[in-house]
Length: 272
Image 1 (cartoon, rainbow, N blue to C red):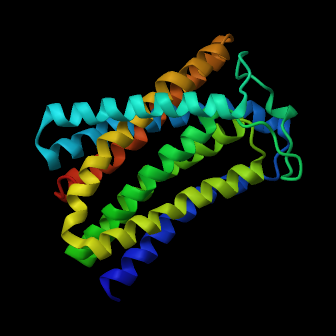
Image 2 (image 1 turned 90 degrees about the horizontal axis):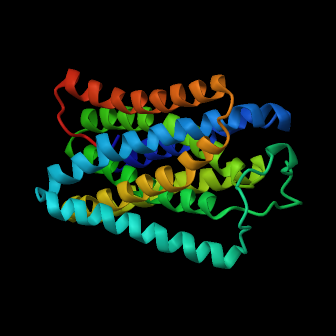
């Protein structure tokens, strides 16, 4: 098997993780509503853990300039602030709370629900992240097949909790489950584009990806801090729900630590 075929195949495998929401299609809306805030909390932990433990350190490792990395993180935050403003204007977003009941959201694509801007922002940020993941996996296969396999496993560990949380965010943002599933999968396929870029550009992709890493981290920090965490505060009145959300945030962060532990155990250093 050539590195190119292995790389594209591995990225397609990673993209399939975005279909994890299939398990919820048979659930009643009320049941999904009980779990959605736990999924949002999981996404918060995964986004924070991804940005702080993976993307920013790896950007510094590649660029070697802390001020540059910090500036690019801020650029990502500001870019997504502007993007959210534009999406608010375009979608005539209500000034009230985001707290529409999922039980009120349609489960069929024939009756589209109004989509909240933060859900679209989540898609944009996730697509950028998937692009980088595809480049990282392909670049590892260009080094060696074993390096590519290990990197693919690390990315899979990284993507699984995030994709579960992303699906929850899209449904909470007003999408039907089928629409959220389709768009989440389309976002996952952006990783194939990243793999092709890495295979075509070759050595140049490292610098390109290095500049995208902190911008993506900034987008994750903005979405988690500005949109998702406030929603958890708004819907966490019962103590048991608050504890559950906090536990899911910790779980999301913990799952982001697993690839680091695997890298350390295998002596791979930075692979993501």
